[in-house]
Amino acid sequence: MKGKEEKIKEEKMPKEKKAKKEKVPKEKKVKKDKETSKFVQMIKKKWLIDGTKTFILILLIITVFIAINVGMQSLDLTPLDFTQEKLYTLTDESKEKVKDIDKDVKIYFVGYSDDNADLSLAKQYKNANEKIVAEAVNADNRPDLVEKYGIENGTTGIIVECGDRSKVLSSSDLVTYDSTTYETISIAEEKLTSAILSVTTDNIPKVYFLEGYSNFRLDNNMYYLNVYLENEITEVDTLNILSTGNVPDDCDTLVITSPSKDFDDVAKTAIINYINRGGNILWLNAAMATSAELPNVNEVLALYGVNPFEVGIIRETDSSRMVSGSPDLIIPNLGYSSITEDLYSEGVIFANATKININKDGLEDLNVTKTDLATTSENAYFRTNFNNSSTTAQEGEETGSFVIGAELEKTITEKNEETGEAALTSKLVIYGENYFASDYQLMENSQYAAIQLVYNKDLVLNSLAYLSDREEDITARKSTGTVTYTATEQQDTIVRVIIFAVPVVIILIGLIVWQKRRRKK
Image (cartoon, rainbow, N blue to C red):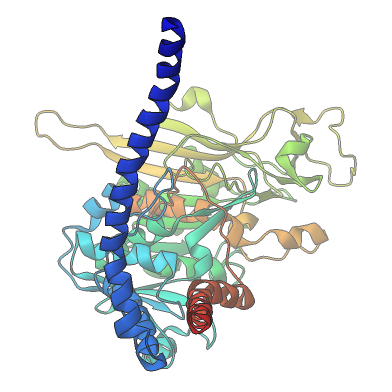
């Protein structure tokens, strides 16, 4: 009996405890419901008793929502950026570069909406320097800008302006394309920072193009390069050396393009004098189809250890280093240099390139150091017989890796430790190609029509920036790309409907259902 009573007691105990536990939460729940229902009852009695007050309540909610959004936008707060590489946040490096600018800089996003990601990025410069202001404008409220900078109606443009200086960027300037990953990579920050520095600098580099010795001239086949250079806030001019007798003292870089005839003695002497006072040269040399006697040209090149160019073109056999299976369209391997280090993902294309013959054994005696900028694969060959249509190397043709781009630095005078005087140097950046930097149409092959300066311009612009000691103008890219997606007008409308219209409809449906249920009661 005793065991049976204990068993019954044990069975009853859990039920009693359970009932006791249930009683406490129930009381708390009733108390909580009474407290929370007061607010709901107030809304029902005071506001939802008639349609007018209900409508006012909805307007109030929408007004508060809009006011919060407008207020947040007016504060120009840095947007939350959850990307790993902070693609939409201004880097400390850019902030450091612009923080000491003491001139007013205006950045106008013509034809852009206020919620554009690049505009949001540009507005962040103000946090680093209050003198830099970015805003969205259109042709209606700023027709003067549209007319002044030639922005066509219905198109977009970005104007960076400081006093009388300005720089215009297009939306395509803010991105680059990685042909390996098929990603569109944003370079908006790099381009905007460079533009700001360009329009605020007191030192504008002067670039002269040598005239009279080549078919590649600024007014003939080099027009677009001229446009790109002027947009880089680089002063560009032509040089007729027979008229001046020398290279002007304000020349930061002398550009020599594919000499088709020899330099006159006056030109040779003037260029050598320019080199000896520390002048820098960008040399573009297309492949030669016929031999020419160029002793004065070769004498200038020999100062840097460059041997005379030979008749012939380089052809590739490595399918990964050519375009569309064409052996004349070479995708060169880029060497490590400040000129090329940010172009690896984008690459460049050379058409009808020639090899650069460098006297490696004589560089030390000339006080010259060499850096390879562009080379072919080991499977390339040099063709001198243009009647040979074979796509493989023939007997007697030179094969191997060829240098088609190099930087050579010549020390004119050594550093003087006693006086503290720095070393005087002259730099030559030379490419065995000229078409890649021109708008010249190569009609022999329809595939060549795809070669445009817009694809290769960063290499030539970086070379000129380097030679002019304008490192900040060298193209830089963030280490990670993001695929850019732009919604169509229809898609944009759908998104806006989802954000604004759907919540209002849900509220209205809820009120209608509540009213019907209320009347049934």
